[in-house]
Image 1 (cartoon, rainbow, N blue to C red):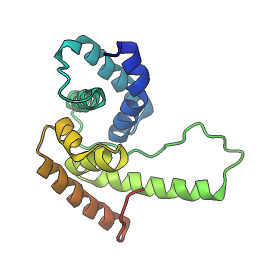
Image 2 (cartoon, rainbow, N blue to C red):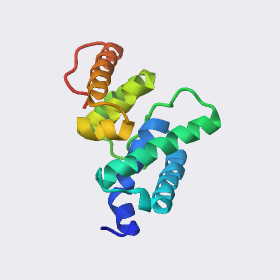
Image 3 (cartoon, rainbow, N blue to C red):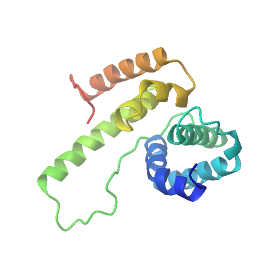
Length: 168
């Protein structure tokens, strides 16, 4: 079994990105990522090994985000807009600019989806979790994950104004 600092080194970037997709604010995502790992450290004995460590940490992260919104009494999640904060503005290739425009449109559209659809799309299509892992993280059935992913993709396609096979 890995030591806690190894878990942090291995998974903190992915957990941060997942939280950032849900909250859309860098500092909040950083705080919630830290809270996630503190909860994992305090509840390490609860990890039975039924799921892999990344799945367990993502579940804790999701619950931490929910707790944050419950405390703040916010109903709607804020969409994620900026992926490359800190990139030098002196040289911006046209291809990068086009990708940024497409990403901004995608994240704005994601922010308009029902939370259940957004979670499934982020976990399945962006984070790359399997249907089974996504079901474990969301504490639901695999059929519900399939349905919410499909419905969410259809709603996302409608928001983006056309037929798209993939979101990336």
